[in-house]
Length: 102
Picture 1 (cartoon, rainbow, N blue to C red):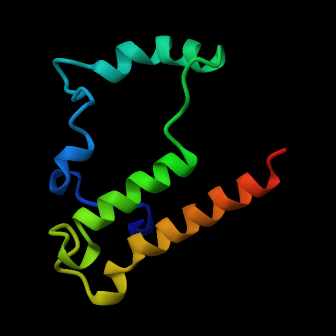
Picture 2 (tube, one colour):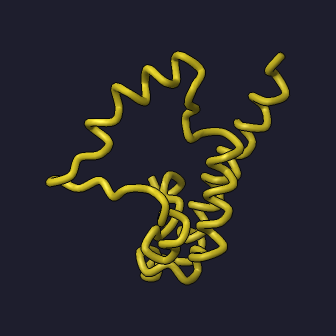
């Protein structure tokens, strides 16, 4: 499952500064999801996927590379590279999807 881990968000708070924090007492995601879903279907909003998400992960890796990530620090070097492998896989899928798109 380490290939799904994309970094320590607390190492790059500036990447998320403009977004509200979702907490138990302020469930922003749960209450905004129906509105966002309708906006997406109407073409007025987009999902945070594809090239935009790859760019976000690149910025997160720059702020907290796996070799300095406290979540990964106790792991052997080969295991610490799995998040990079996960990003490489996702990047390849995004590139393939954009080549196939009309």
